[in-house]
Length: 132
Image (cartoon, rainbow, N blue to C red; front, side):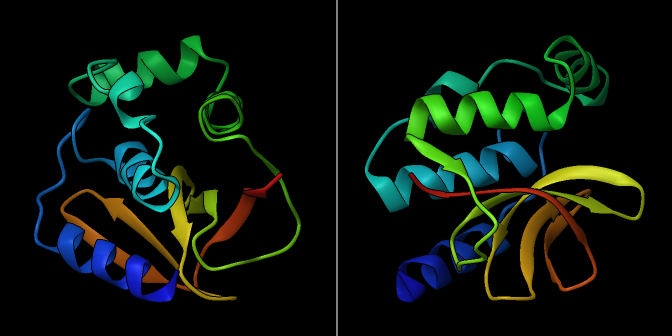
């Protein structure tokens, strides 16, 4: 798993952030597709295309955690967990903003932010999913 995750992060580091195609949610869905062999990303694509439509999509779904929970549990069969493992999808709070992220170690997470892939320990984990 570690090599697969490292390869995915390296690949994503060269991509520019773009709402609806390479943002925090599609970053996580792309990882889960790669890790599981399933195709959840295609269901996410096209739901929004800019910051305003993304905010409307999140609001209509009841917030970041309910949307992520429904998507991750239905598409990938994962369940909420309190056990941190590399590769787990997360919803985090980073400087007052919620975002989807991938756990890369016990303390570090990777996420797509405004212009790049970012790895940091300085987040508050709001929700985490793992193997059911």
